[in-house]
Image 1 (cartoon, rainbow, N blue to C red):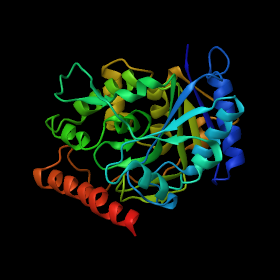
Image 2 (cartoon, rainbow, N blue to C red):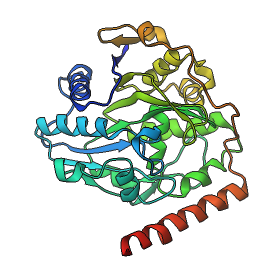
Image 3 (tube, rainbow, N blue to C red):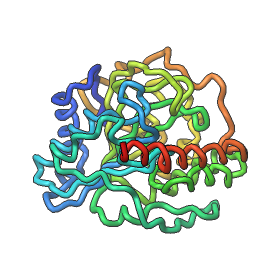
Length: 321
């Protein structure tokens, strides 16, 4: 059976048409009907890398989060949490800057920091790999990545987004434990994805990031939303749309090696009103100067100091003022 991917053209962040797409994703992609029951406990996992306003395209747009909340509420689901582990800043502050501030009041969702790191053993035996054990509290996880170029991993899409379930400064340390092998790093990401196993992934590609992502790139009007349950298939379709050779996306090469998901485009079925050719673009730019996966000691120390300043000083002073 072919992996199914739902694609839809959309050029703005008006919530109503996004909600229609989310509803279609839930109804069309579930093999046994709808994906969620009213009693489900749901965790939303957006990309909340840093605290920037939505127009910077660093984070998943709040309109997509709101649309997902609307659909879940209509299904009678009342237990909805949202979480990530930002690189710099606390979750609540980053979420507020990203435009998520009114979601708790409007939809009753909790923005809840990840907790209880538990060890994850992989074939690569990467020491110290732990992901948030708190995800075990949920019946389903909805993965909500932002479509972005990435100066280390070429693109950051569905599989890469789940690296945010590694808590805090463990992430840059893990970058340093793969001996600058990007495919090995990709294999680690695949192992995390296997463990997390989201029920649904929806990629925010309405306004993507090109160039020197995942933070310092520029907005690109890709104009699409994409959804699926097979994250490898979803990421493979995205590489085809922006004209990036899939072997240059190290998570996809790792998924092929580990036989995780469907990387063969011939075995992926794109559903929706338009076929994949209608979404293709020819001018999407990757990072001009790709960089190593490993952080040098200076960059690692700088990252720790930034986090200490942001959370320990800047955010504390803001609360006191």
